[in-house]
Length: 259
Image 1: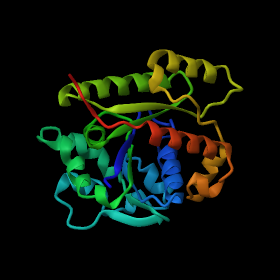
Image 2: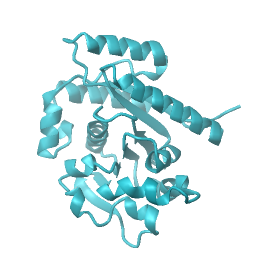
Image 3: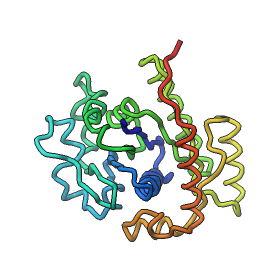
């Protein structure tokens, strides 16, 4: 069965993209699903989370945009059942170096095509800006997850993502499914419930009906280099991610052709 490919993206940083990718991958691996994580962010937080120094990485996603990679980029079992393609700071140079090149939007999709039969799920952790890497991720993905911190500055990041996806839909004449995930929700604050309501008012059914609560155990899991479900299996954030995953797997629809 061909893997489902998920882009985890928002045109704003610090919204829990990396945490969301690792949390969902960890839960799927517990169900004996084979998962590939792809780090598309020059900050390489996902790579660091896995205990790999991005500054010392030789074989990263960058190689796909340079020449066809002569080596296997996949690092097997960075956690049980989870493989990784590392990111590196050199990714930040791609837009400047390749801005005049043609046909770059399909690089990642072409490469992943041969990997889909090896995995059940592929998650791409995207950089928080629109460029070659994000376009590649959106073109390659079946679904887009948009983590959005429940504070007002996050609204603009979701709006930018919605416009980007709509633009891509028009150019490819198909509709890409996407879901906004409210993250870092702290019900003790005034901003969190107000922002959550604003997200639901503006984006309606595209906003997941639950929230990922603020939880220091997520930070501790990252520091320990372990998926949250392994670090704190009974934690409230892990239970929220379990609920999210159940919703994703039940609700995910393939791309739809536009009339």
